[in-house]
Image 1 (cartoon, rainbow, N blue to C red):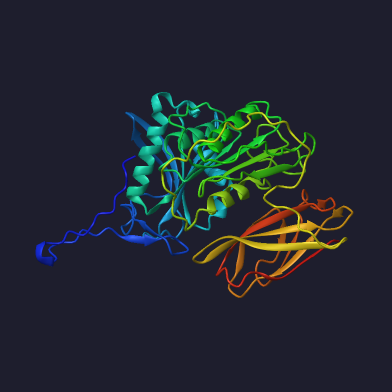
Image 2: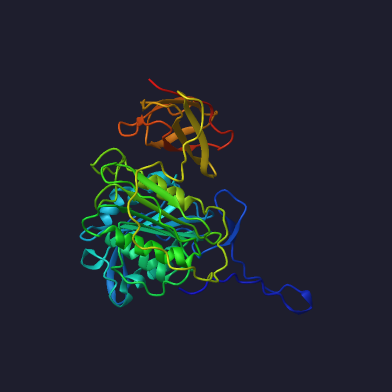
Length: 431
C-alpha cells in the first residue's frame, strides 16, 4: 500500500498566495483527533451496498459491501474486513452481520466481505493480499474512511487470512481478530506489531488450539508483551476465559480468549450448542476494536522482541474472565456495575457487570436501570430487556443466570442518544 500523504498549501514567493491545494482534514466520530481524509471524503459516494466485482491480480473477484445507513461523506468511518471460512462465502458473512459486528456498529462502520477463490484463502503468490490491497484502495477512493481504523477478522480459514493480513500489512490494519485460526495463508513479514485478539476452543477437532496459541505468540513477541501461560477453562465447564496480556507496547494490546468448545465461531457459555445471536464473541471483538476510537496510531517503529512465549499451556480450571473480575461486596448481595465501552455522535455502547457477592449460587438475576431523556437501547446481548427507554429491566438470558459464589457475568447494549448522563438508578436483584 502506498503511504498516505497530506498535501501542503502551495504559496507563491513574497508570501503572495497563488494557489492552495486543499485536502480535507476531518475529525473522527467522537471528535478531537485529526486525520487525513481519504479521496472519498467530501465527495458524492461512488460505491453502494451490495455485491460487486473488482479486477485484482488479473482476475475478476467479487465482494459484498455494506455502507452505513445515512452515510455522510464528511464523516470518516471505520472499515472492517470480514473473511469467510473454508467452503463459506461472502454472502454467509454478510448475512450473519459480519460476525455479529454490524448490529453493534451503530452505522459508524463500513463492512466488506471478499470472496475467496475456491471458497478459501490459499493466498497463492500473495493473490489474496493483493485483493485486500485493491479493495482497501477502492473503498478509500469511493467512500470516506478513517485510515487509522481499519480492521480484519475471520473464523477458521478466514482467521488464517486475518493473521496473514496482520503479518503483511501492519502499517494499514489497526487490529485483527482471529477465531479458531492457523497458519494456512502464510505470514509474509510477521515482525511488526499489530493489536491482536485470538479466540480458540480448547478441544478444537479441526484446527487444534496449539495453532491458535502459536499465532497469538507471534504478536505477543512483536508487541513486546510479557510472555505468560493464560488460564484456559477445563473441558466440560462450558465457559470461556479472556486474558489481556500485560507489558504490551502502548497501543498494541494482545488479548486471548479460550473457550470450552470445538471448532465454531459462535460458542455460548453454559451451552454446548453454538448460536450466532447468543455468542459472547461479537461483543468482545467489538469492544476490542472500539478501544482504538479517537486514539492516534503509535509510532511504526518495532519494539525489541521479547523472549519466546510458551506455545502450549495446559488448560486450567474454569474461572471468570480476567477482563471482568468479580467485584467484592457483602454476602448474599447481587450487584450491578456500569461502564461505558465507547461513544460516538448520537450513540454509545455500555456494559453492565452483574456479580454474585454472596456465598451461595445465584439462580437468576434482574437489573433495573434508568436511561436519560433521548437515550434508547437499539440492541442488547447476553440478557433480555423489557423496555428500551426510561426505566429498563434486564433479566438474565437462559445461559448466564446461574452464578456461583463470587462469580460474575455481563450484558452489553448499544443505545442512541448522548452518552451523558450515564444510565442511573442501577440495581440488581435475584428472583
